[in-house]
Amino acid sequence: MIEAAAKAAKFNKDDDMAVDIDQHLGEADGQGRIRLEGQDAPAAYQVRAVRNTSGAYKVRVSVMASRDWLLHNGFTKTANLIRENGEESPVAFDGSLDVGDNIAVRLTCEQDFSGSEDDFIRAYPEFTATLKPGDP
Image (cartoon, helix red, strand yellow):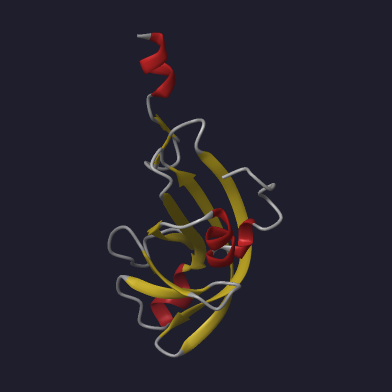
């Protein structure tokens, strides 16, 4: 019973991405751009990764964006985040954005990834400085 409890998924209070304590790879920061309707704005973002017991990764990318910039540029539900490596990740707001929302809003996406540790680092270079060899 104790062993099962120790392996049970734990939830972070700030989000609902389940993590097995032994499999959480950490969080990394990046500098990119939000692209919406042909307009770009600089954006700092965070990447969080978890590896499950089969070796597949679950990755959450989140970025805080200006509500006013998003609304001014025609935001409805999603925008593209261009990450440091040039990859585009579609990020979405949970709900319907309007002027009643906070000045800065969180846009997120979850991505699945399968591959080796080297493949993971190539796909998510934000973790290069964070992960030590053999961590994942």
